[in-house]
Length: 611
Image (cartoon, rainbow, N blue to C red):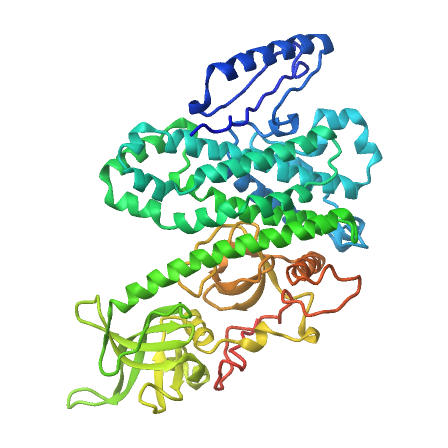
């Protein structure tokens, strides 16, 4: 089927050098080259060259000159990493400012902080991102001396959304032309397998193409960007549903093909070593759509934080954010549903029930945590040995509504179910204060097990953090999750992620560089539990991948911004200045890694940690 020609990226700049050089870079889908477009291109370029020599300064672009500041070789993966690193550095600079300097850079009525001039120096390297205020047309217009700093910051936020979309489209082009259209790779797959692997990527590309062209037209109207969130909203409503289908269908495919298709692996290795992909993996291209829709939501959040209250920009940003939030949520739910179902099926195949069988697979059930613990069996004695405590290994499967107590078989691939209990009937008790030998030991009480009896297990974990994680998972701290307004503290500890981390267990949280989290718990063996500000997701992560935000003013700023976004997500609009309301982002101050010695239940207080 004939497709619309892809965007070309042109640049004619006769003032970039004393010799007034003419440069033109363009990329086009190979299957769309035909006589008509080549003739049309020749005529256009001829006219542009003539006009350029007359005016001595002329920019030509189907994607405007602002996009050309993102080099064609600057792929979205590189943009994303660079952008996050710069965000980290900017936050560090704000964190290091004295309170007096912080006050001078803050806009009181909205809580928006103007970045110090030093922040702009972060973007001067060859691998840095471009700024709106560095465009020649902007500098020549005199706008930088006329606009307030607040508006310049807003222009930069909108400009990043546009330029990052151009970078994203370039990476999608490589996914299509370098991988999808490669005959050697495609010959290793059947037609159905190709569709299974790449899903509806062409629909995703068309959506990006339309979106980019509308953003381009907005920029072409004026170098002073009026708004972009109205465009985001329209495209999110009309075209971005293709992201949901792609993300849900794509999750496991690349891994499966690498495992089972030798010819595919060999062809892929050759393609991944090509200079065009800059050492990036095929997987990094496959996951682009989900990364983009998530990043787009954060970029709109950034615009919303800076928008003047009760303005058209704010209204458009709110609508765009709500629509993107819906799409991201559907993507996440679709992925979770597939992965949870697959995990339940895999677990059920390994279970052997001693007596009464318990159905495992259910649409309303998912795994929260699994792992081995040691059961303290009690005092034993023999003729040759003194009385001692023996430990027997148990393997726990904790679901959102069920606990299975199992024992691993001698073969290691099966688990015999010894006991089970609904999660609501679990209680835990810490035993740390009863001696060093019990430092990593806690009691687990099943108020009513599968035989309708009350049973207690004394369990030992491998570390202090593992014990705390099991206790919090078995008896979740519901009260902390739904704290009252009076309990929120604007100076609660916060951390920012400085190294991306992928969760290894179900109770862990995958975090990306520049994520900001409220710190809920910390242990002496370097694990933390946090809640991400921009979406409220909670989980554990190692402390080595984050750094604490020291400035009280920066922490308060982060909470104000999170509060504003939360109000939007709940459909309540933007709060008025001084409004006090339930802010999920505000949390209690973490205490030390000691846990209170009392029974806890799902509606009660989980162990607090002292700092």
